[in-house]
Image (tube, rainbow, N blue to C red):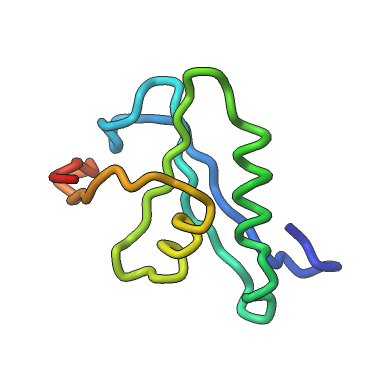
Length: 101
């Protein structure tokens, strides 16, 4: 999402693959949700995530938002947007494995 010529907010939409064995073949993950420091607090991250969901939602598809437990802003965004907590994970080798819920 641009504000003039400045990239104010962005994210990456990634299809399911071997690094996330808890996802189904049709699922997507939202990751690297970023907002330029000068534009934080404007609601741009929420708008960017909503746009990505709207453009990618399909019947039977789950959209995952995986974040670090220390990323309070990201966790608050997930909660505000109604994402359901699915559990904690741990990086094991090259994969993120769900370890508990």
